[in-house]
Image (tube, rainbow, N blue to C red; front, side):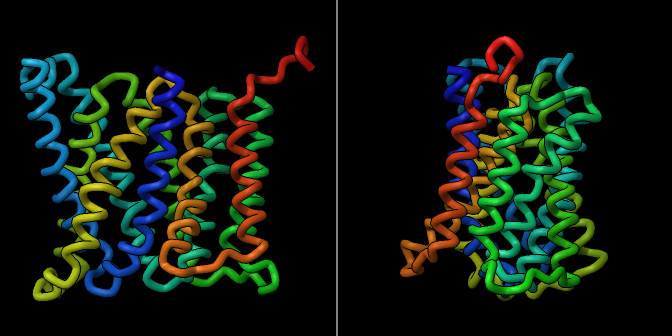
Amino acid sequence: MKQIRNNLFPILAAMIWGSAFVAQSVGAEYFPPFAFNAVRSCIATVALLVVVILFAKVRKESILPAKEQCKALLIGGLCCGGVLSCASALQQAGLGETDPGKAGFITALYIVLVPIASLFFKKRAPLTVWGAVILAAAGLYFLCIDPSKSFQIQSSDLLLIGCAICFTAHILVVDHFTQKVDGVKLSLMQFFFTAVFSGILMLFFERPDWSLLPLCTIPLLYTGVLSSGVAYTLQILAQKDANPSVVSLLLSLESVFAVLAGLLFGDRMSGWEWLGCGLMLIAVVIAQLPPLTKSKK
C-alpha cells in the first residue's frame, strides 16, 4: 500500500497539473498573479475544509487536531503556504509572458535541484535516481524546447527559474512536516496561508478588475479544486516516508501530461516531443529500480 501511495499519488498529481497549464494560462489573461492565486487558494481551502469535516464525521473524530500536533500543523502550514505562495506567483507571472512549453521545462528543473538540495539535509539519492534525474532533464528539454531554435533566457524566464527554486524548497519543506502531521490537514493549512499571503500582496501591488471574475470561473474552479486542493494534497500524502528525489521525478511528469492533453485538442507531437516523453518514462522506470550496491554490481 505504501509503495502504491508513493508512486501512484504523484503521478495522479502530475496528470492534474499537466492539464492545469491551460487553465492557468487562461486565468493569466484576466487576473494578475497574486489575485488569481488568492482566489484559487480560497477555493482550495474551502474544498479541503469540507473533506476534513467529512473525514471527521466518518471516523467520529474531532475536526481540531490533537494538542501535540497543533503547533507542528500551524508552523507546517505557515512554511508550506509561504513557499507555495511565492512559487505560484512566480509561475503565474512567468506563464503570462513565456511560451508554455518553455515554462514547463524551466519549472520542472526542480527534479535536478531537489536531489542536490537534499544533500545538505543528509538525504542522499541512490545512483539509479541520479541517472534517472539526468535522463529526465534531457527528456524535458526535448519535450518542451524545439532543439532547432536557440534557447535564450529572457527576463520572464528568470521568474520561472525562481519558481523552480521555490518548488524545490516546497518539496523539502513538505518532506519535513508530512512526517509529523496529518497530510490532508497540512494541505488545508497550507492553502489557508497561501490565500492570506497572496491576498496581502495583492492589496499592495495589484488592482484586479473583479468584474472579470465570471469570465474566469472555470479556470479558477479547476485550479482551485483539482490543481490545488486535490493535486497538492496527493503530493503531501505521497511524500510521507518517501524519497523526495523520486517523488519530484514523478511529479515532473506533468510536462508529459501537458503535451498529451494537447493531443485531445488537436495538437500534434513532433519527433522531438515523442523522444522526450520516451526518455522521461524510461527515467521513471529507472528510478524504481533497487539501489545499486557494491555487492549487486
